[in-house]
Length: 379
Image (cartoon, rainbow, N blue to C red; front, side):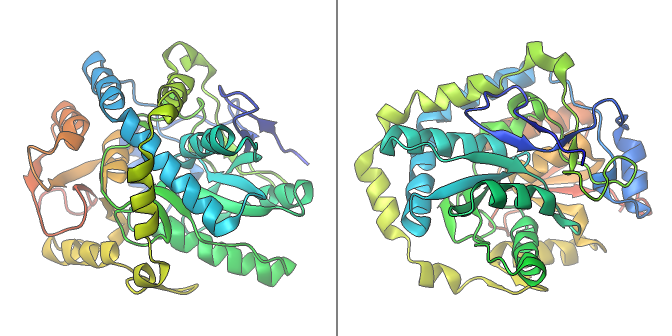
């Protein structure tokens, strides 16, 4: 069995990655190579992109955004943590979905320690669209925490694909092992309107969405390929030790945690009491094969308006649009306003890559990235 348990550039007290280190095995590919491969049928999880090296101007946007939003982020982390405790109790294991969920999971763990003086275990594991969750990682967690409840955590929702993938994976896990897992994903921001446990539905800039490995413990996004991963392995990752000097992973965590003593308790309680699960659930319909939510319906409208054949080429929300600009070959970016302060880094990346940006307001997101189709170079 070739499994690896490590913490990237984080402290092991903050998180344990249940991932196989394939740093010496895999070679990153440029965006054009990957785009052609993905649109030719190769699954995105079988390759890694070359890590984007941010300009000074881009990093300035990250730092400025973090300083402007860290108190808000601390409040939202508190709200999400309290909703998790309310829904699941205190005997929990936090399981972040690598890698966007990892910083959020650490912040939740830190808040629970701050507020309740308890220290839940926190793991980060892989889940991949169309491929499912890492069952070996789940087995490890269940074996080591047999009496605890698992709470899955991610950063934000886009179309709701990962939320749907998680529901399907939990159903399959029950069918295979007769073990019930709660598939209600907890996210900091739910602009897609497809999560029941969330802090806000505002599509705002979570600063960790700006960057890749350098704000996520220096790990890549996860890899699942027969070339590197065998049946008993965890899913794979690359550790970018050469980027240690540019790493802001722990700085990001510390800046937000230092604001926990500035949380507005009245505001937090107002938001906590405003959540009505039954009302929220009316707008969400899903089973193991189907998902319907407000965000996905908006994406269907974009698909029809712009004559896009494959819905996977549409990436809504600030986090997903950022990923399109960093990892894929974009066709265009849709934004709700050129004056939206949450989109400064989007405009900067689009300018650097010469990608057109246009106004589109008929969506519940601040922005949406559309990937260029191979056969539609000009539409």
